Image (cartoon, rainbow, N blue to C red):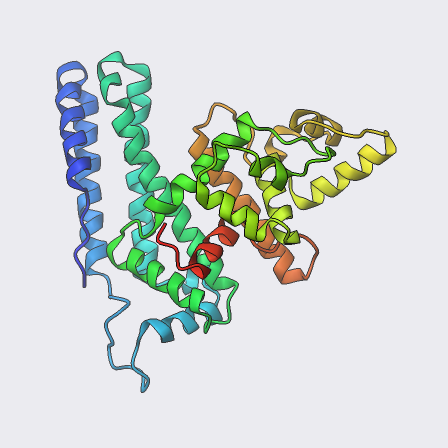
Length: 328
């Protein structure tokens, strides 16, 4: 049993400020906010009372530890929901419900001027929760791709267990900015397929990337899997779609195409893009959707021994940082 803090002091302060304004302008919405907050506090209590993952119950002759848990998680199919501990499943439901709460406030702040003063604070909370979900999915994908005895598998397990036990963000607060920065750069420094400078070289020339990205690209930029994973990330096209595009370019004697031209040549519907069809979505939502789709494709390639990147760019970057023992 572990205590789950339903809301941080920062979140409670924001909720209080929003509630005060809502009661003045729209009391019905204020009451709805109160009921949702109360539900989340009750759900946090249920998660906290769920069986702990780190306390040995004495059912097995081998004492439970993070190492035995790492081996178990990697062997039993952690990506299947029936194999997830109850505390993990309940905790994820709590986190998603909390994300919807701030999504609710964000929509009101977009439509009503009286709440616009808190838009940025609402977005900060929303992003923190969204990236904690992304971190959870990332750790699960890393563990699924392991034998259970690697050093990085143990580290991923420790972070994941901490998240499941306390519903903390683990390393999400530190890791998320790196991905957001690259996501922003992709819109200002758009690589062109077919140019002499490949994606890696173009990004190495970008002065908008933090030193961590330059180190990663310098050390791993010649690895085939990194190049493929980076292309998927930047072009919002799968490895398979990119191969089809190269064939079309050869047939039509095209030397270079932009991202938009690539989508047109492939005849893709908007929902076939890795980041989804709605350009009005928050950039963080599009990044998370892109990660989920790229992660599913990578897992499919691993399971069926197909060519192409078998890890996402996020996974490759995180493993690189851990290999350097970098406190990012």
